[in-house]
Length: 325
Image (cartoon, rainbow, N blue to C red):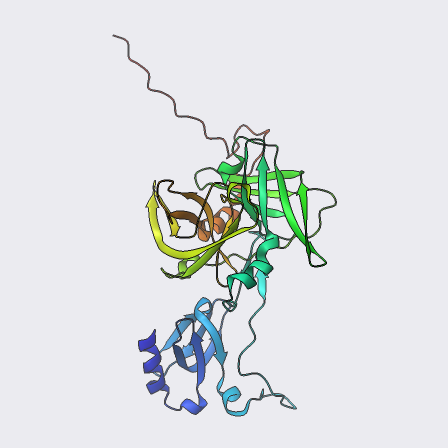
C-alpha cells in the first residue's frame, strides 16, 4: 500500500488539489476520491483507480477542505473540520449484530472497559458457569455451546451501571435461540418481562487483525466476574481439529469461555473458548467471522425441544454390524 501511495502522489501531480486518505498503518493514498461506498472508498491516483477498504481508513481529507477549510457547493459556505466525522454504526437486523461502518479510533483498555463492561455477562447453569456478551439491546447474547451443553435451566448475571454505581442483577428467563455444537457457539435471549434495554458491543473483523496486535478479554475466570486480561495476537490461523482459531497470550481460564476478545477499537474479534492447560499464554478464541455466519444462518441451528429434527441434536453414528460366520 505504501508503494501505491507514492505512485499516487506522482501520478496525480497537483498535491494542493488532491484528496488524502490516511490509513491505519500511518501511510496515505493521495489522489481524487471518485466514489464512496459503505465498504470502500475509490481513489483515482492518476494512472488507475484503486478501492480502499473502509476498515483500513482512519481519516478522509478532501482537497477543498485542505485549501479553504470550508464546505463548497452550497449557499453560505461554512467552516468544517478537515477530518471527516466517523460514520455511525449500523445494525444488521437479519443477523442481530452491530458493525461499525468506519473503524473507531484506538483507545486504552481502561477507557474501553468503562464503555464495554456492562455488555459482558456471566452465564450460570446448575453444572457450572461461563461468560457471554450482548449483541443486541433486546437481550440477545453469545456464549459457547459447551457452557450450556445439556442444560435448559440458565441464568444470566448482568452488571447495570446506574448513578455511577454497578448494580448486579440475575435474569432467569433465558431462552436458547440457536446452538452450533461444532462451532461451539450458542445464541441466548433474556425474556424477563421487566428487562431493560441492554448495552451491546459491536462485532469487528478478525481478518483485519495483525499478528502482534494488542487484544484483551473480559470474562469470569474461575467465577471472578468482570476480570480483564490483556495480551497480543500470536497467530490468526492456529489449526486445531480441522478448525482455525485465534491464538493469543491473553490469559484464558475456566469461566472465560464464551466471553469476548476485543481489539483496541472496542470491537469483538473473537469468542474465547479454550486454553492449553500445561502451558502459559496459550489461549484460543473463535474468530468473529464464524460468529457472524452463525448469526446470519441461525435458523439452521434453531433450538426447539419439541422438534426431533432439531439442529442441536447430534446422534452417535451407528456401529458396524458384525457379520455372522
